[in-house]
Length: 140
Image (tube, rainbow, N blue to C red; front, side):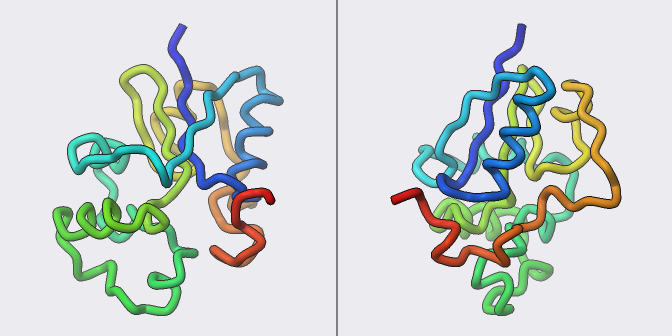
């Protein structure tokens, strides 16, 4: 049986809900810290598959929300360099199941392999707290 890896931002309410959903469906994800993992461009890039570069980013990240960086104008190399320097920019969670990888709690190869069908009326990838606010930080 393949191991399910779930890379999250510690303390993220949305990620906590996603893990709970996986567990309620009988899966046992191994939760890892996305922010402290030793990513390289080579290990991070496969999670994004054939998505456009702009979809690699966490839309709730302050610099993305504010427009401080134009994610539509970046090359893959530029995007990866930014994410390696600031992992909060990565669209999360990152999921890995065997050889399958995906970013975001959206329809994708990992959730498909797990038999998870998402309700299209609910966005389980959106930040329920309105962004990377202090409330989203690690539990104190």
